[in-house]
Every structure is written in C-alpha cells, then in structure tokens.
Image: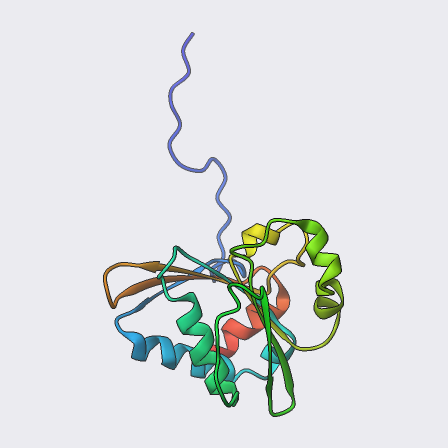
Length: 175
C-alpha cells in the first residue's frame, strides 16, 4: 500500500483576520522611508517601555533606524553606535533609552558585570542590535525588526510582534 502525498493543510480554520502574530512586511525605498517609520514608531506611547530587537547583516540599516528613532524621540547631541561599549544610554524628554549592540558580546559573565539585568528590569526603551549574541539572557522582544538590504537604498523589513505590547505598537502605527 502506498500513501498519496498530501499537499496543503488537512484542517483549516477560517478566520476573519490574520493571526495576531503574523509578521508585517514593508519595503523602504529610501532612507526617508526609514525616517518616516521611525517617526511613526516614536509616536506610540507604549514604546516607552518596549524592547525592540534589530536584525540584519552588517550595513543593512539597523543603526540608521536607531538614529532616526532616537532623533524622533527627542534625543539631542551625538548618537554613536555602541559597537565597542556594548550599550549607550540616551535621554529623551521623560524617557530613558538604552541602545545595545551585542555584535562583540561573547561572555555571559559580562551581562551580570555590566548590570544589564538591572537595565532590562527598569523602565525605559531598550533597543538591541545583534540580539542573537545575547539571546539566552535577554527577555523576549516586543517587536523584532528584520532589515534586509535589497540594494544601496531599498530595504525589505519584516516586523514580528510576539508580545501583546508589540502587537499594540504595530496596531497603533496603522490606526
């Protein structure tokens, strides 16, 4: 006896809308689109206590997005990448922000020694580039932003919102 190959789902649930955690895919045609996305995200009040992760190859635009977001939130002065320092704190009106870059992170003891557990337990916005380097130590992301460079200016962006806070952020950006 042979079994015929099955293509497709055996049982399909009819839903009026997509599942709550369905990724959203965007295309940014230029850095202006990146800046517009950052402004829309910055306008969300729930962002104040969110954890956002940024994923993508070197040069994809993770730090560029963070810079636009920090400016949109009102951060003044120089905004530098925390590649060597691992974390850079920032202040915006009424908001504490920590920008992590775990690219060079390789020692879990550094997590405790640097006080990262305390930072993640405190209120404020946390942004992490290369979060996979510290994945076992960080809480789940509210919003995971995956950036893929298509060419010098165009980016494919996939947004995953696995938490209720993340889903509220995305919903607020389309309302």
